[in-house]
Amino acid sequence: MKIDIKPGTFAFPTPVWCVGSYDADGKPNVMTIAWGGICCSVPPCLTVSLRKATYTYGSIMERGAYTVSVPSAKYVDEADYFGMASGRDADKFAVSGLTPARSQLVDAPYVEEFPLVFECKVIHTLEIGLHTQFVGEIVGIKADDNILNDKGLPDMAKADPFAFSPTGKDYRVMGAQVGTGFNSGRRFMP
Image 1 (cartoon, rainbow, N blue to C red):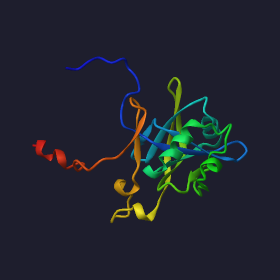
Image 2: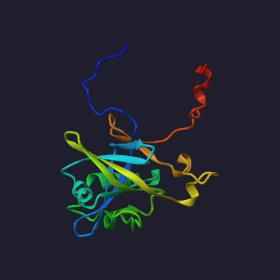
Image 3: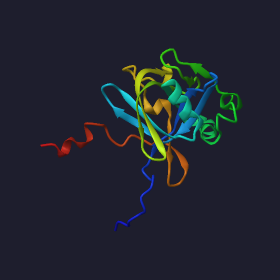
Image 4: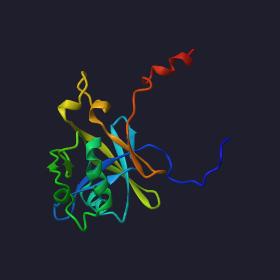
């Protein structure tokens, strides 16, 4: 039996992505978000939604760019910290010991130690209430060579990303493969 639940942000899993930006003084900053995803294939675009109150919001508005660094599970503590502290009050890179790297394609830094990075140029913003959605065209992708598959593309199992569960407020690693996209459902096709 289904039970009605008051509407809320209970969709899961949500990504654990670290959004990089430079502040007005050029200081690198990073914050962890869970509200984001791929939103277009041509041009390839990635969206992140931020509250106006965040330090990163103002930086993205000013610079028109951001990066998304995808942490592996071994960096769960650092990623969690990036979501708790504000760049107004702390140098998150210095505190965490991680390295800000300058993108050559957009005016934003990324986390050098994280295995997968998307470099995004803002092409749209949408005010949605408490959050503003930034749509960024993916103009570059950086990946550690040890996470690539035999086709030269990022392999999720090798990257070892983790997800956030909004209902339990916990982080979860990805599980075993349970099917193959655009193939497992073929038995239902005419």
